[in-house]
Image 1 (spheres, rainbow, N blue to C red):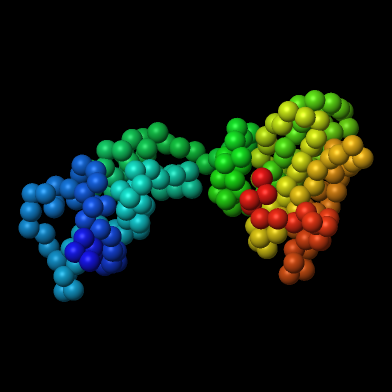
Image 2 (tube, helix red, strand yellow):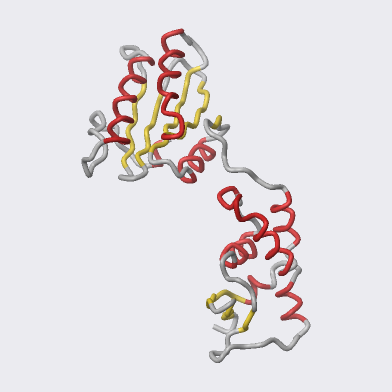
Length: 226
């Protein structure tokens, strides 16, 4: 394909397109639009004498106009230097804002926020909790405090719902199992929280390859279960 470009960045080869490289003002647009002579390696790839560690992120920014920097908090200084070298103003602004890793527990505004929180968590288990804004009681609050005692072993994400029901979805990221528990007219919120504590214990500490007991009939699901 005529638009394909091969780049040798510090010895690592990347393939992309000219349209991606020239999407934003900066190093690459200047290179291509001014026809500046560029060094090439033995294979004909454009050679760039830079560390390739963060170049995939640089490419993704040029492709999409945005990258999520939260998981790169420890590398922010290096990424900012690369953004400055490639003259990518938008990425420099993102680096300057110094985004922090998502704090847990997290209170989400949308289902999409909850899905992103589950996907970005590095913990073995993530609990997404939908709690009703009506009929709150002392037993439910005490039970929720108990489940929060897992501390740094489990990430929690909360979202309000305008009814009396509480729903907890437990994501075992090691086995990709999902367990869905929710209250009803016959099942109180603090009872499902107790059941969830048992499931979390099994997810965290079981030596079984399945990682957790079976969910109640018809309740296991994927991330789409929000």
